Length: 205
Length: 364
Image 1 (cartoon, chains in turn cyan, red):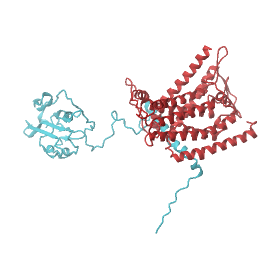
Image 2 (cartoon, each protein chain N blue to C red):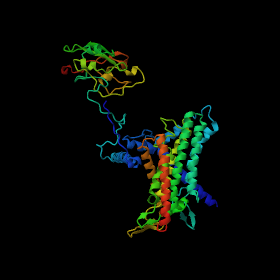
Image 3 (cartoon, each protein chain N blue to C red):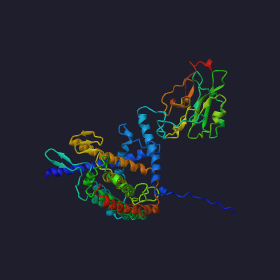
Image 4 (cartoon, chains in turn yellow, green):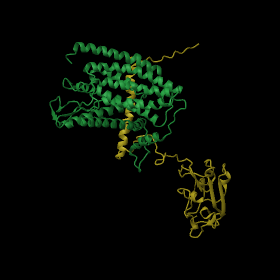
């Protein structure tokens, strides 16, 4: 039977007195203390900004850097004329495992574009952030690259994004003013159709 | 007579104001210093009208919280003792400051002499240690009156620890008393004003380095803070104040900080020359390389007070640094360190000091 004798290091006399070990511990903590104290003061004076004084990320003011593939709040991409790229093909609504996307397509005036979304809702309270809708979209019309993470709301209704908030990621509920000029079911006017295709240059499509 | 009373009250007021504010600030220092050590930022969110002042208002917010919290007294507790215990703790920690000299005597106008010390006692050192020892009453009463087994065990741990370390503490300072030949703290500080060979101030740390290490270790154990926080062990082993809430708990917390400041004051007074400034004589600086800088009496006294304050604050910083550096001792390690480490060392120190004083006493 092979026996391995583990030799545990004997403490020297000085180590047994604690004092040198306490000193080396204090050296480490003091080094951190004075380094950070110096850096904090230097930052107040606007110097050495490239050296971080603490590992803390002060959340609401300062955001953690996100990976470029990170999936955050959705947005609908727009054409040059301001209308949505979405062609109402329903692929994202179909592929959605959480069934949180609701699309009502309407007929597009341009004969080259078959449909467009009159209504496009995503219920973020149900969404599982799988990104399938982004993967499946043939038109690159929906993306999850806004970097917006703070999606909490006080009610389930506030979690339901409609086409206004999806077209403009900066918008948060309650949306008071509608700036979309193509015809869409507008929540602000109680679900009535609002907007026209007039003034939209369809040649740029 | 009336003037003397006013002066004494003013001195007491100044000391109480300074000490209590410093203790309150310690909550801020504790947060910020630990944050800096651990590469964090520390509490900085409390604000008044948008001013955050580096998180200083958290101390205020804490006080408001403590005072407005529900004060819970356990149903089976001894109500009187339960209420008295925190007051004992704070009271004995506060009155000990009366004997600390924080400056040289101030001479005003027509010969009125004010000792910058609340109570001028011939046995100031004994008085301070008596008050510190009485602090154990608050601790053990808190454990006993709560009628909670955890609290009683915590109180017993605290009592055993404080009494064990008080012996090493007491014997460690006997060496200092022997060297300077007085128990009057004001005289003791004055005696430390001498120079050895004109260059090195004859402070306690020079005369009694071993006593200094024993004293600081034992005194840190007296304050019941990490690494000697077995009586409290807030999160793990449940201490004597487990049944306290609101400001009564806050008072135990305050006592810890008060004792830390007390230990800093004592270490300064006994080992670092109290209000002495190197090369500063009552009429001004006399440098050993021949320079001289004469200062008025008021400036001399103020320099002394500033010197004392800076030394005390440095010690507070050091103790806080130690608190955030070392892990907690195990109880057997604690007792071993106290009885088999510090106690014999302090006794040997006294013996060696006695022999040295006997043979070389005149030359010192």
